[in-house]
Image (cartoon, rainbow, N blue to C red; front, side, top):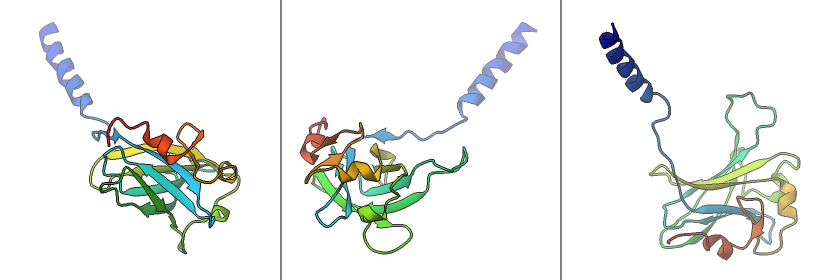
Length: 161
């Protein structure tokens, strides 16, 4: 009995290891969010040598069911070729021109991330509220740890470009 039970348990364990998310995402680079002189929301992407070419702004979890995905509020594209720091303007998914600070929900949480369209690579993310952007000085961004810095300070976190 013991000899027949052991192979069954081993096969069951092997079958269970195949379950779940088979995708491994490499986290590389970082992203910050700021506002330019014209009031447009900008994503500052520090590529750290990765091909991060898309940015996505998500809404927070307020009012969502447990398995409901965060809404995509805006997207943008960047050309990371040869540039360690790139800036992207965001276009609202509802249409219109470039996303402006006044377009953001003043009370809601927002999440910004950058990702590579051709691989499973993404940056860290930054979570912020519109009020966080109001307090920024010129050439400052809100970073993933909730502090403010310059794009050059974000770049200092790269191991390599």
